[in-house]
Image 1 (cartoon, rainbow, N blue to C red):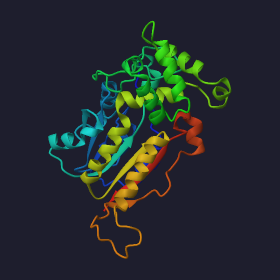
Image 2 (image 1 turned 90 degrees about the horizontal axis):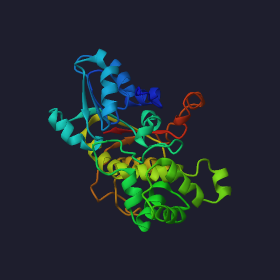
Image 3 (image 1 turned 90 degrees about the vertical axis):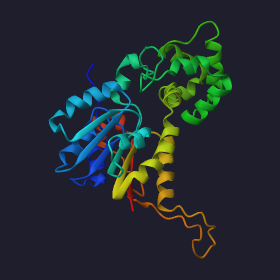
Image 4 (image 1 turned 60 degrees about the vertical axis):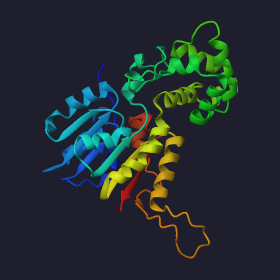
Length: 311
């Protein structure tokens, strides 16, 4: 299966990076290389792109797509959370721009054996990096009812978390839940019919929550943004594309804190905490896809782009 993935908000992200032709850029979610390709087109002289992805299929696809820029990029199979190690290995301390296009790629959704889709039957997997041990089947069959409730509530924002968790525990009593369709049916039967009709596919939030848990997505995002900001050169920018409210909230709050880290009480006439701003938020409101982009790529509908510039 070819690695097909349409990069969302592509033009807006490239414009938001404000690319320095001699700069060093870090694409932490390489995918098929769509954003990286456009960055490389704009680099000259000493410009370098570092492309990172934990999915071996993505590395292979991007290597092929970017081969006309040979010598101007380095591809690394890793998680973007390892940015410090990656930059140290390449003997680079500061960079000029970062792109994160979060969530699951179209290739991963459409490649049924990866087990990301609730619409088709496949083994429960959902690992973005197939080298890791924990997969979706481990979560579904191994977590306690209380753990499942917390996961569905916190990562899926699922109002029927208790009912679904109880149904999963009941459903795995005789034999393990092994496939996406088995799980989908269990979730469907645990949710009131009227809610199913109004809110689209009943298993959507459950699958989101399990995927986030398996890949530790939100914790990685929270802890890594701080490191990324500190590696940017003055004037360097970070562009983050999110696909659901949990990710977007983290990025929004982090960017606000970088701009205004002061912890003094509001009634203090001057700041005495000594915490200095790390830069400015470029996007007061997130950039969203145009009607035309949504029409051409339905999966772009929920995407939001936020940009921060280092002081």
